[in-house]
Image (cartoon, rainbow, N blue to C red):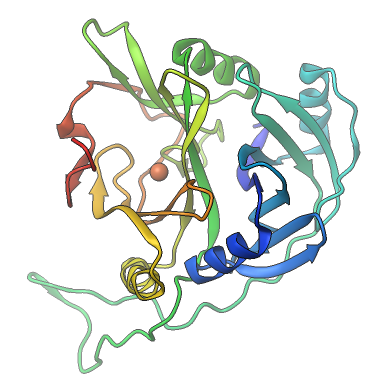
Length: 304
Ligand SMILES: [Fe+2]
């Protein structure tokens, strides 16, 4: 295993105050804002989950938590890049590379973890039709922004999806959980890629690669506490007048219950909960492109 998990996303925004207000209403927490760089944390133990520098709006890349010093050296050799002190909150050592489309990839080892912050309420105890588990207690979660637990994945556009899918497999050891094709099955147009974590369970996708005319970002995604956290977070964002994109629904690929919002610079961010997990025994599945595989329930994708 080279990489334990994805850990943070990096943007540039022209107005750091505006994106800070948006992301705090969205469910992240202030960590550090020193002039040119805004760092936000989640309720989990990651050193930070979101960083934006000031400048022309751009999705810059993502950061990964590396599994060992040896793994960091391996990655540094693959990218012909030095191992240096990591300048981000939490410190540690890091190396930096880029994928074939030019996205910045940062690999951090040994950063100091933050103490997780209690995110309010106990886990939901469900009463479904056949199993009554919540007896004599009412389900009354507090109203307020979502409690984002961690940064979960990105979905990116590439003009060369097959090349980029292969590159992430060969360079970072990632594997497709599910592929989408158009026409013949070998004509792959998108992939949901998971980290290589051996027998340990990992997210169905840490990276989704989707064919597109230009290099770009579809969305960056953050894991919330539970379904009430997604639903109440939705109401907070509605109350604040932010621009909604799509949701609430349940995806097909990865099964997440999702809700998408649009940040002040026009980037899409996703709240999710209840995603699928896979490991190295999980097969790669293939599906034809179509509306049926966009979601299992919820409103239609805007424009389709
Ligand atoms: Fe997503």
